[in-house]
Length: 117
Image (cartoon, rainbow, N blue to C red; front, side, top):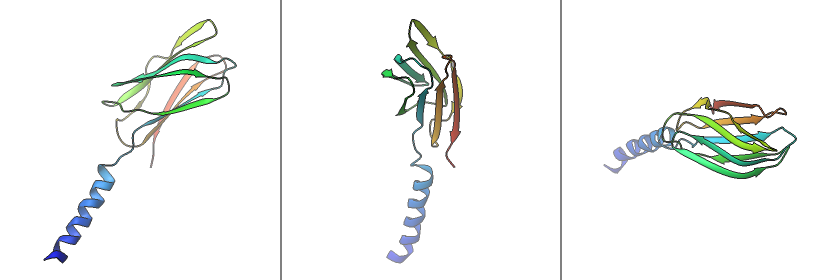
């Protein structure tokens, strides 16, 4: 009787590993400008994260917990300017997405996303 239950238990565990344990999305912000980004806010559906500063030529990585499928908005101060990207990109709340937000040399923002395979 115990032997009959083992294959079912293995199948349930494998199914849970594949479907129930998907990784949360990770956002990487890369500052390619010559200015420090300050008062940085990364937001989307059901999340908003603040980062004090991202120095020129560096980056910052964070994991987010969106409440639904989402885009990403990036807002920050650089020198005397306030920049807001508007919502860009698309990722699902689950599924191991990796999102990259690049702040270019002219302070333009480009956001892209890809799902882990």
